[in-house]
Length: 277
Ligand SMILES: [Zn+2]
Image (tube, rainbow, N blue to C red):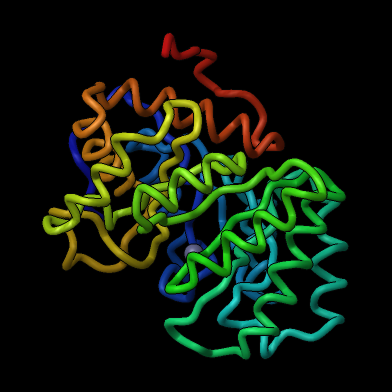
């Protein structure tokens, strides 16, 4: 597995598809490699009832792994109401830290858009009812996402994150105004993505999160290496630190604090260090 020289910096990978079959049989190695690289905690993401169940299983097996449970927009046409009920039943478990991933996706067009909206609405309402944060996937439907978030915001405060954010600065500002956190994955490191790095530079320090979205999208300079895995978060963190003019340690402390603030069931920051920013 590819890692960089050990660093004192500490991170939380807030979005990892650890339940992906690409990790089958080697989750222990992947998790240990991440711990060795300074990744203190990993949120394993659910996309269907089955993968949510697998994520929770991994969370129960590993102290440093936590689970998000939900129905991904690309999978909602295969989801049943019974699946949704079983996901709701999982929310009681203390290692379930979030709902998701949810959101909307016009790029793949795997599920009717109205059905995607129905499931996104269910996640939003459940978040507002339970206080558990939600994780948003947004692909080629920024306007529709914003409209639904604005509608939900009229009902009450929003606790959520725009995951693997690739939108522009206007969309980012709109999301921030609604109370959302913004999370960056490997794409921010890609050479041609100067515009995205500018967005990463402008996010307020207390609203920025980091993730790998593994096994997809390995960061530069390991773009061709697959699968991506949680230890690779260091490269994304270094890129974000550089554009923000802070140290790797600083972005680690700040983003870890933010993750603990948003995903309250993660518990406190293990290092007990507070950022001065
Ligand atoms: Zn994802």
